[in-house]
Image 1 (cartoon, rainbow, N blue to C red):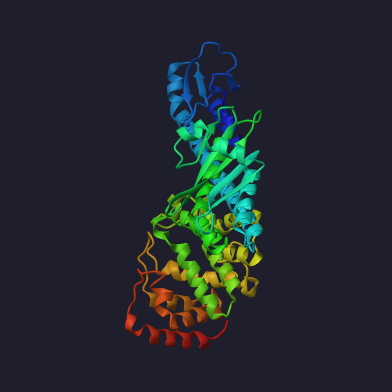
Image 2: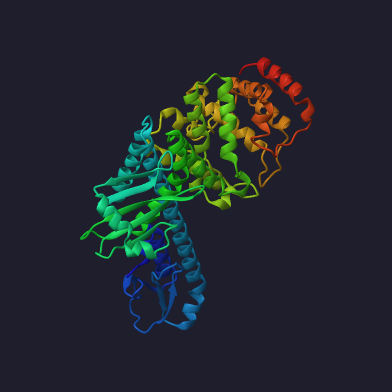
Length: 479
C-alpha cells in the first residue's frame, strides 16, 4: 500500500493543506493510501452525518487521495473550488519531486558510469598486453555487478581469438556458450536468462563497426538472486561504451580514445537536451585546444583541456529542457537554476577524482575576471588557467550560435564582444591567444571546420580585421 507521504520529500505542504481545509473551510479531512486506509485524519466535532467526496491524487501509480466531508452537500459544493486548488497544488508538488528524483537518479547513474570508466582507464593506461587489458575490464565489470564468474570472448590484434575468464574453466565457458537460453535469445543485445541448472546469466555482445566480434557473459550461481534489470542496464551502457573502442584498443593498445569518446558521448547527450546547443561541447573543446596550443600548453595538458571542454556542461543534465530552450527571458528563479549547472557538474565529476585542472576547467568557465561570474565569484588568477580558456571558447561559441531568443552573430561581432570584456570579464592573454590561433595557417581549420555554419561580415578581410583587433586588445587600458 502506497501513500502520498512515501513520495514527498517534505510533507509540510500536505500538512498545511489539511489544516487549511479543516480549520478555514471547516471540513472533515482524511488522507487515504492506495488501499483506502487512513494516513491522517481531521474530523468535525458534533457532526456524525456528513456528506463526503473522494479526490484522488494524480500520479502514475495509485497512492490514494483525500476524502473531504461537510455537514451538507451545499457546504461541500461551496468548498470544492478550494479543495480542487489544494489537490492541484499537491499534484504539482508530487510532479516536481518526481522530476527531482529522476534527475538525481540520472546524476548518480552518470557518476557511476564515469567512475567505472575512470577506474578502468587508470588501470589500463600503459599496459601493452591486450589480454591483460581485457582481463582488467572483465574483473572490473564483475566487481561492479557482483558476478560470481565471467568471461570475454573476442578478437585479438590479428583477428585471433582472445578469451579471458574470471573463475571459470574452459569447459565451463564452452558449456555456458552452448546454453539453450543463450541460443534461443536474440544475441544482438544485452539480455538476462536462466541456464538449465537455474544459474542466472547476463549476456552482452561486443560489437565493432564491422559487426559483432565477441561476447561478454557474466554468471551468478545459486543460491544467489538472479541478475536484476538495473544490472542489465549498467552492463548495456558499459557495452555501448566499450564495444566501439575494442577495435581501437586492438589496433593501438590505448584506452585514451575510449575515455575521450565516452566523454564526447556524454557531452553530446547533454547538448541534445536543447536543439540550439547541438555540437556546443565539441566546438568549445576544439576552440579551447586552439587557445591552449597558442599558449604553448604541452600535449598531455592539451588532451586534458579538451576533456574539460567536453565536460563543461555536464551539469545541465539537472536543468529542465523547458528552461534550456525557453525562447523568452528567464525568470529570476530560472536564471538562478541555470547558474547552478557548474555545481551540478562538480557533483557529477567529484567521485571520479579527476586531476584538479580538468575539474576546475569544467566548473569555472562562468567565473569572470572582475568577480561577477558564478558559481563562486572567483577573480583574476584565482580562476584556473583552464577555466579562463574555456570561458573565452564558451562565450565565442554561444555568440556565434543560434539561440531561441536571437540569431547567431557574425564572427567579427562576436570577437568585438570578447574584446569589450578584456580584463573585466575575460583574461586578456586568452583572448590574444584565440586571435593568434585564428590568424595562424590553420585559420580555416580553427573556425570553419569546427563550425561550418559560421557567419561573417567580410570573410575576405578577416585576417586584416583580426590584426586590427589584436592591436586594439594589446593596447586597451588595463583595469
